Length: 470
Image 1: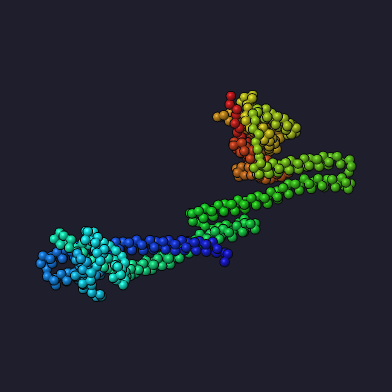
Image 2: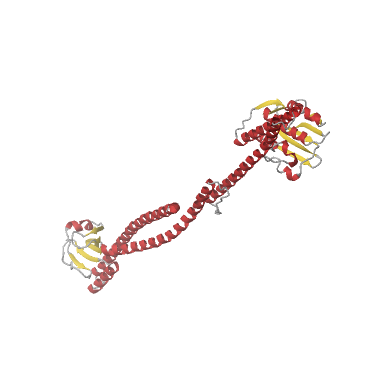
């Protein structure tokens, strides 16, 4: 039962709305038609009363005889289904239509019943006309005018029962039509409720799958509506969660791999020293290797922590004004030993001696350190590293260029991905996070960084920073 509760809610609520709407409309139409029907009946009876008055005038001047008068009177009364009385000034009924029922000729009406009519007014009433009828009637009374003078009254009595039967028949027809509409509504509401609830039901099942760790769950709903948008958003979310899960697994695997290598080396050398496998006279050399491995592991951990900060959004920038040229000089000096060991030539060209930029100095130093480290790492012996800055459109363009092994076009598409290594043979030189961190830092500054490289000829990294305006 709980699986279809949304469908039931939609179905029942829509049916209730239709029933309430049909009830209100039926009631309104019933009252409107009733008022219209009675108003139309009154109008017809008043018109026919005037017609009878005209016939009486013809009878009074001798244009028609008594038989003709009775014939005309009965035609009119059959047409409107009413009893007609002709009443004199004293209230005496001296003529009536030939209808089955009580004979009214010779019966006198009270002065109150004909007073307003003798004063020239028309009367319309509903009821039993002073108790003279056993069933309610619609009564219309008009002055009887002969030769321009009021000589009495014409009363017409139409039974309300007949009129009510007509209205009820119409009302029944309306109910039947409403019933047919309701049946059709049942089918349509059932269909639309299913169309709405089914994708939500599928989405609920998919959410349960995602909650259990199955991030491959998807919702198939191609309708271009709000539910379709929700389904698309869910699929996008599921896809991103799946990617995050894959990244998490890759991260754990990469961290494990990167840390296992130095830890294995450290453990092996220390065990060798302690158990005497490594002679005491060589212990110092192996301890230096252990020291190097611990430092490499420290760098790896720092990179992992930096990456975690970048991805968590906890990466505030402390922007200040500083000389980018001076920062480049200091960054190069830090690598002096490695530059000398590899017999590299470093050329530094600045468009101006000082160039003040606005950025986070520590983070930009990290960018320069990573890029220069890469340039040294992938340069050939006695190679050349060229670092230069230039100004274009209020931007400082900083380029670190080497003439090393270069990067293939296929690898250039992935070098900004974390844990990616273009040169797989250099697996011990890092975790593949350097360029990923560089990219995130530059993006955090809302600036750009790009690479230009050709295999066997070298690589150039260029990034931009905003310069201070004087």
